[in-house]
Amino acid sequence: MKIDSVYLIIYCYSQLTNYITTTSEELIQAGDIEGVVVTGLTTKGIDLFETAIDRYGDIQTASLVLSYVMPKRFRDRRVEDWVEE
Image (cartoon, rainbow, N blue to C red; front, side):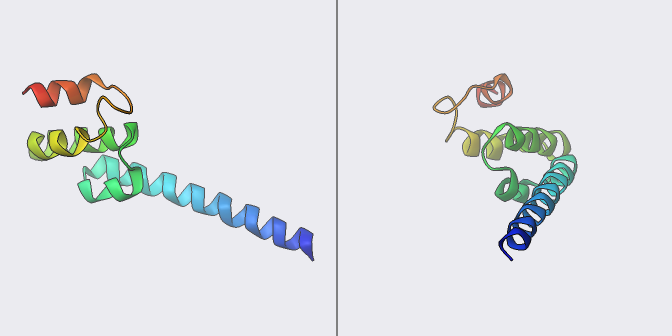
């Protein structure tokens, strides 16, 4: 019985990981900034904001949101450029 439970947990985790990866890629491609809930304020989140800026031109929102993690947690030249604009 325990082996079945472990298999189920691993299978569900694998499915969830695939779902989150696929969903985050779709959100990044769409430039949907609500997708930051899925991507977080990470490099994937920066990719998301980059697409949103390209699509909608809203540099101000991206700069404001990402200034919370830059440069405290990591550095990304794109964000530095947005803040300077």
